[in-house]
Length: 225
Image (cartoon, rainbow, N blue to C red; front, side):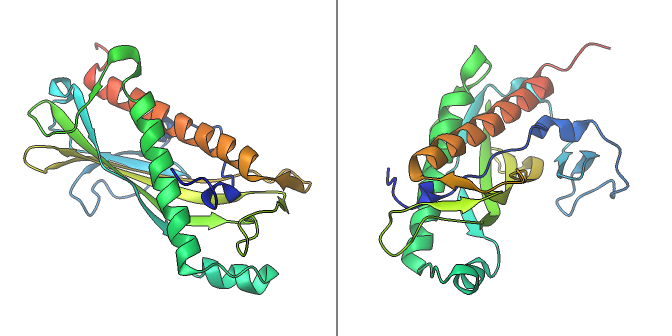
């Protein structure tokens, strides 16, 4: 996996877990545009599910490669802010690296605890998880002209994770989750390198994968009333 440009950023997931979107009241509509039931909503995101789904039958996960999209005008703002002009090739490499890293981490973390197995094919007991990274906003990437160097920032960036879960056989949408996060501002400028950014980015995806796994376990094994 290419390790050059994508690792020029760090976006640390805030401490509030993805599953905590189930813990706050919301004034949002009861249905999403996908005709799913709103479970709960917080300032960071929301969770919608099909209330009629029998989650107990799902034991396998078929994982799609994540799509990645930058925040609108990100490239323009980088040029205006510091003269650091990202090219389409630069941005494509970042998207590819980010997608590959998320796929790697999710495949490592989701099968833990033996609750689920990863599957390369569809099946009656297999759900298909489609992750999307949107609004990717890298505040201070490394120099893009030579792919080396370092940057300073008090916050590394922000992004949104969108997850859609489907029945792998008939394509029915079972659930949709959205979680937006920003690396907290530290109040001081911090030196970032490709090595430290890769380590922290991996940690972020581990946290997201763990929260997704916990959500699916809770859905499959709901507490007895």
